Length: 122
Image (cartoon, rainbow, N blue to C red; front, side, top):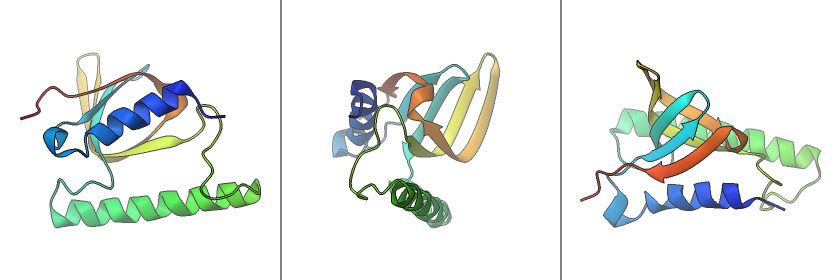
């Protein structure tokens, strides 16, 4: 059975795909700091970034497929509990007074403490 936590994180992530929230980033609070970014399958950036996001998404899908095949799980079945991850692009990690910028990041659900979206909707 999957978790309320995972459902909530995914639901907030999907909000950023709606027209009214397209300019908003997903904001995840973790022990490492605050992580902001867009879902990797979104089309919010230039062609080079989107192409790289497509490559990352393909690799993640292949890993997910192999993992589920090893466990004899149907591919469409959700992983139990907080197992799994969410993939972001155009990522910023704010940790204390340090800021790190990354093109992509997979964040595991069990590492997320809180979720919201950035407040810059139009």
